[in-house]
Image (tube, rainbow, N blue to C red; front, side, top):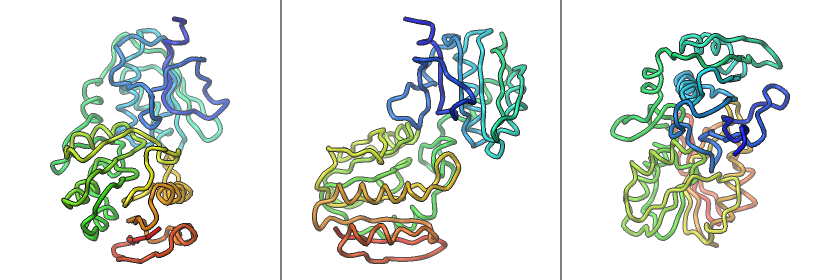
Length: 303
């Protein structure tokens, strides 16, 4: 095993800002198949590069995990866009006991240093950012709507009919919509998919119905196992790395159309301002607005 294989990488830093060693181990929970940084042995990495997450609690947690996994004296580079935590990054790393060099480049703050022999506040950062129960359901900072029920999901859950047959929940999060869908005894199987490993782990704890399978997967990638479904439910994402990206939801809709049988139905919730109707129309023979309230809308679309 080469030294490069002991290097760690978290996320995908922009080209030219922080090159990672070839063969570095990917640890991002948003990249299906990546290793879990929580499971990495302390003091086992010879170097670490991280594109830090935008959320304060999540960012401090991820940095603490990365520093814990580093060998004492091993180098790290942690960076973030200035407007997504970068301006606070140096202070957060110093609070963990690090001495950092902080530079600005291409709208990012880039912090470099070496892992100190003694870390400060590590246990607090790990406890604050780790899994916890919120209103009776397991969740974790960094997961979509981690500390509250998303109003769009709540609106869709209130208006779901008694679903029947085989279906899927695209972008399942911690399992809120799945729990509503499973209230129907005619539902025979529900596949839960999410790109966030933390959400998947929470969903497995929250949704224990034997009719369910939960998978860590990117819905944007074609999946030959999801065909001729009777229904799909979803509250598709429209942010990527903190920036609005409407193409995400549009891709989710296309994947739903590919996965449904003729006559199958998509149940979709979205923010009112998102123009998904133009994507729905050529893919579905009937589109029914179900409800609009509190800035959200729900559609039923039949293939």
